[in-house]
Image (cartoon, rainbow, N blue to C red; front, side):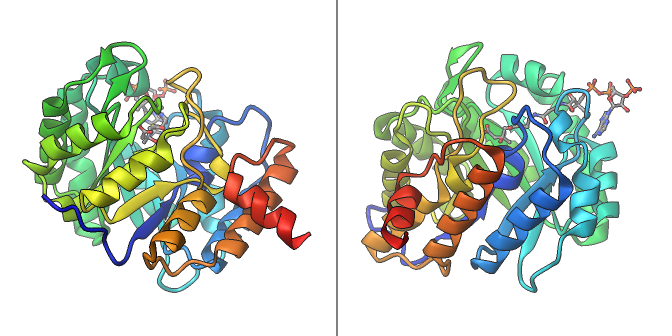
Length: 303
Ligand SMILES: CC(C)(COP(=O)([O-])OP(=O)([O-])OC[C@H]1O[C@@H](n2cnc3c(N)ncnc32)[C@H](O)[C@@H]1OP(=O)([O-])[O-])[C@@H](O)C(=O)NCCC(=O)NCCSC(=O)C[C@@](C)(O)CC(=O)[O-]
């Protein structure tokens, strides 16, 4: 069990997907593309650029094909797509996604609401996705939602998270992202959960995906770093929420995470000021408040 901070962390930017999927207003493809390009220019090496789900349930992501086709690609950047099944995976690959993400849950109730099937059925649906991705030579990331709490079921047992994580790894995912979907975790519950999962999946293969609903995300990230986690999902300007978790606020803001990492002397290879400007750009365009405190502070200083 590590209590030493890592020297380098990889950021997975989920703003263009997780951040925007819940926006009610129409967002043009051009705007999504410009956001993605700004994030890539800032030095972010993994960007979740869209999802290929049923547009009836998540209308904002209906244009993901177009986004993937229009955006300029920066060499060395992975452009990931969230895909729930073979149909989604086929569309994502046709559109040119360089990485796929499948998503399961540690709560039966959330699995049913989110993807209309049980946890076990979801794993069966993911098999052909994995086969397709394997044949195409495309890496697949696995998400587990509700790793500490579920909006429908309440507390979630760390052992269930560990078991689903192991199953996703066995399916062939290269990394497992642990989602505190409703942001209820605290350093104590996140650490307990990570310790249970680390019994099944090496800590090097784990990422944390923490929503900031209760303002605990940065503390939870620090606790995760102390446990040896080296991959953090975040969303520029703290954009987002989950359509299947009412009241859930966005992911931890990328700018806030970068500020934390800088203060700890942990390398990340990203230009924080450029991300803050991307956050300003998108929140101005959407007419919504900027959810990053570090972003707001940096922008105020550079005015
Ligand atoms: C998963 C399904 C598709 C199952 O939905 P289903 O109804 O069980 O699927 P089905 O196979 O029975 O098909 C029903 C209809 O859906 C269509 N369909 C089927 N698949 C697709 C597809 N890929 N793309 C487009 N259309 C699709 C299919 O063609 C058919 O159309 P119809 O014949 O009725 O016209 C549905 O429930 C769905 O799309 N749910 C939305 C899930 C979602 O996007 N949730 C938000 C993202 S998850 C998240 O935010 C959490 C995460 C990852 O960030 C981590 C965290 O924070 O915890």
